[in-house]
Length: 483
Image (cartoon, rainbow, N blue to C red; front, side):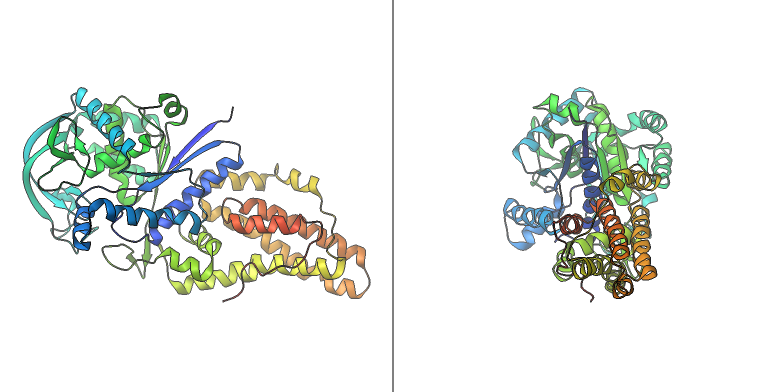
């Protein structure tokens, strides 16, 4: 029986078009999912949409649409990323799915039975952008640092609360027992310091008369669940909790991928909710940075986002995947400009990989009538080398940029071999055996490169493998024509 592996992204809100920052998260998760599949795991890869809460309710009102119809339209747009980015996710969950709503209500009941839910009146400063309450220490000049363009709301109302204050030591014990629970270490230290400073109970409901778009609270028709409480449950409802506990237990716990602005919700709030419901915490939280533009964070609220679908239409799926994986740091903020994208495209893809594949195939077709003797034993034995294993290790540590840098070494060395040996000159001198030997070696290296590229740029890897394992190798359409 195959070993099980479960990876999930966060769920984007359906209040705007897909943006490059979320494309980064799901492409990174896709690399891990593909890598694990290639390693022989039975992979459950979860993606979907977060469809409740005030932000979405207000967006639907502004659009003059019923919330469900509004969500249906945007969920379709996010699901279209599967084809556009060549994603391998196996499950697309929506928090308006009936089975998710029932799971969220069952989860609430377990936390309530454990004594961790109570009702009280309270005043609070609330950021609609984050859909989170904010303490004064989190504000800069009285505003949320993530949404400085939005006024904070001061609210006083009766809500249900979760007893987060009961879980400080339990969280610290969890972190102590799993030293890689949050990656990278910088973010792990942030959340540990946050928890050490003390936890305050947080609101987990909203009055239905003020904000009706949410999951009904069990036994109280006047309240709907706070969006974070509802949405976080998707990680377990996706694998059929509580209906199919055998399936749930075979895949859980999961690797969760999240941006740094989700650190508190994913690595602290969600973990205590799981403890309250009597379930195991997630296996690991992996946190990435933001994509910036000229030093400013890209965000829907600031209006400076780049639509990945526009990039894909112009430059292709694998060009976008490649840039995100190699030139956007897997943990820290990274800058994106269309100028840097074009520069990378030409330097790495058109002149590097694309040129290597194109001219090698052309010389094999012209000088050797499309036939070479590739050493398949050599290719298989390469998989046991330190270099091959190092690239695997870097992928499993989410260091995609470094892994692709190592693949670059193979590409550059192969191009240098061609330049140094000059097969075209040897052919002119009638040294066909030498030409055959050199091009066979380079063709073998190209297949090794394609093996390494499978999780990163699967279309390109598949095309190369198909071309160089054909009975007759022909020069085909350029992989990456210069721009």
